[in-house]
Image (cartoon, rainbow, N blue to C red):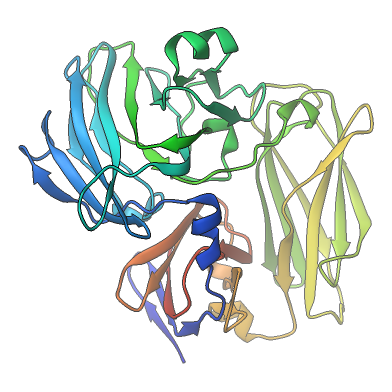
Length: 413
């Protein structure tokens, strides 16, 4: 059953969806940890010395997070901010207000305890990923993780952050710190923005410290949201990529498909090949668009594919980004659905039931606009969210980590 409710500034779409697959083995194998719904255990809320309890971060394991220090005027506005559809409900997401000129930050200690008796617990392995380390012209964020050793992974040679993880630094300080250096704000908190994140990993961890803050060149304060997602991620080696692709979208406009993409930090890029397919597996070359080649600025590209009297109900597009040496990388695949006028005027979600991915086909009026997609469980809790600056006709949500049940998708335009 589907209900479409038109609001003044948003479109709310409610769909009853049942998910069969239940991903219980992932948390056990990789010890992905869940931090949500904290309660104040002791001390004054949001002040130095306060201790918060997070129940069931893993099976039979609770965690406490203490505010150890607030430096150079930094204040904590929220201990775990999951409002507004930003970030991930399973992550530890403090909102911190900077103290003004120079470096200001908050220091936290995370401890793992037995959920029954409160005794210390040693986790077999911990992956602590600092997401969305961004900034602007006057304020640049940083994140630091101290597990007393371990190792760190991130996207190599990125322009966004500088990770101090060389062996001599690690052997002396036993910690990893990433500073934003480019000073560019990112929309929302997104695990696909790997250039703005790093993962610290260590075995046999009972506690570790986290330092979050920013460096400001002006004497003014601003609130920044941080996100520590206790999951591991694989990072591509940026050296092998011919460019940084910021976005790639496909919009259906009557009998044509308008493809738009934006790049950044192009280095020796030759051209883009637009590939087209009808089964999501096999693609053929449809067009070639030449690149600017070398630039540190964002560049916009577009291509219009006239479908004419196409008899296919679903069309798949992807970009092959080729550099002057012939090396290439692929974009994500964009899906266009045809043949049913209902797709032009209403929101469609499929497959239903779904497992690892939920696709949402948007009406023409919502394509090409900034959107926020949120997935709620039957209890009204948001379990997944995504923001997109330029919405494609079909967007997708990764649902591989959520439990089976009934869900509602909410889309705000």
